[in-house]
Length: 67
Image 1 (cartoon, helix red, strand yellow):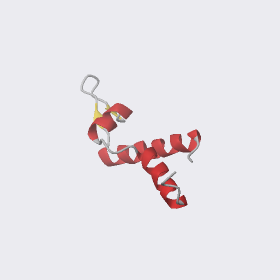
Image 2 (cartoon, one colour; image 1 turned 90 degrees about the horizontal axis):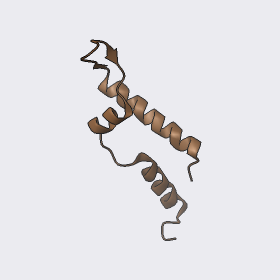
Image 3 (cartoon, helix red, strand yellow; image 1 turned 45 degrees about the vertical axis):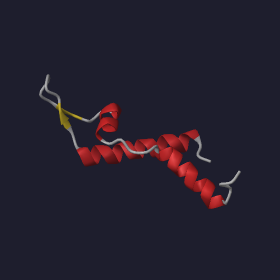
Image 4 (tube, helix red, strand yellow; image 1 turned 120 degrees about the horizontal axis):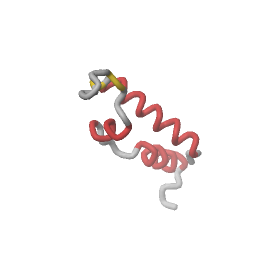
């Protein structure tokens, strides 16, 4: 089972990777470049819940999927 700390670290890593992939966004009002916010990343890339996927694979790996 993932701890809350591990879940947070996985989500931070996922958001970091998505920011690298999608790059910066130009703020139209200020004319400055900025990082994409978490909501913007979610809108650009709606993937299955990564935490749920990790937990599911760990359960299958331990052989307890029928519990």
